[in-house]
Length: 398
Image 1 (cartoon, rainbow, N blue to C red):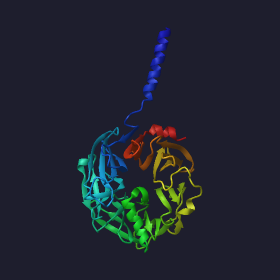
Image 2: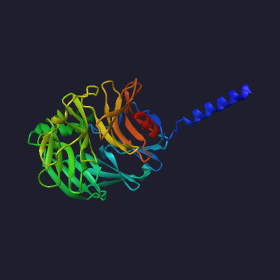
Image 3: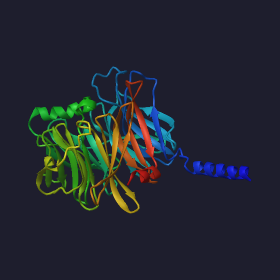
C-alpha cells in the first residue's frame, strides 16, 4: 500500500512537471552564429509568418571593395521554433542600408532600402525568402530613413533629399509616390552631415527616425526639421501643423507609441539622460519641447540607448512595453499600465554577454518577440532572438 502511495505521488509530480514543460514554439532564446569572422550582423526587425519568422538584418561590408561604409542587406528565414532555415544576402554593390519596420499586408511583408545611387527601393517578400521582389520608388526619393504602414495599406516613407529637406511621402505598393511633403532641415551644413553619419556609422551616430499616422489626415515623423531632431505633425501640407522640438541632436524622442486615449507612450533623451512617459499628452497644433517631458531621468539606461515600444493587452487591461538598453549592457523590458502610468513588471535580458536592442513585437498569440545583437566569443556581433510566451508575460505583470 505504501509503495502504491509513493507511485501515485510520483505520477502526480511527473504530471505537474509535464504541465510546466515549455513549448519550444512559444518560448525560446536563439543566437545565430556565422563562420564569417570578418562580418558583423545588426538585426533591424522581425516578423512572424505562416511558417515561422523572417529577420531583416544589416551587415558590415568589410569583405567587399566598397569604401562607402554603408550596411549590407540580409534576410534570414526561421521556422516556428526559431531554428535557422535559409538566408539571402543582397549584392552589396547594388543595395544597402535597409530600414524597418516590416510592414505586413495580407501574406506579404515589406521593407525599404536604397540602391547604390541612394534611390529608395521597396522590397516585398512572402514566408519564403525565395519570393523576394524589389521595386524602385518613383519621384526620385532618396536616402530612406523610416517607414510605416498607413491605415489604407500604403507605405508612409520618411526620406532625405541629400541636400536640405526631410520628405514624408505616401507610396503605393507599386512604388508610386502619390503624395510628398518636404520640410527644411535648416541651412547649416553640419545638420546635413549628421544624417550622412547616420548612414555611414549607425552604431555611433545613428538617430531615432520614425514615422506614422494618427488620423485620416494627420501624420507624424521624428526627423531633422529646422536644425533639430523634432517630432513633427503634418497634414502633408506646406508647413507642419505642430512640432515637438528636441535640442539639436542632443535631445529629443527615441521612441513613441500613440495610445487609443490620444496620449503617447514615449522614451526620450536629453544629452546623456533618458526619460520615460507611459501616457503623455502632446499637442499636435503648437510648438512644444521634448525637454518638458523629462521629469525624472532613468539613470539605469545607457546614454542615448535605442528604444522600442509596443502595446500589450492582458485580461482587458492595456499596457505599454518599453524596451531599452541598460548601463549593465542588458535589455530591460519595462511594462507600464497605461491607465495609471505605473510600472507593473520588469524583465531583463542578458547576463554575461552584452545585449543590444533592435526590435520588439507582439505576435497574434500574444507572445512577445525580442530581437537584438549579442557578442559571440566576446567580439563577434551576432543576431539573437528571444520569444517570451503569453504565460511568461502574465507571470511578469503584477
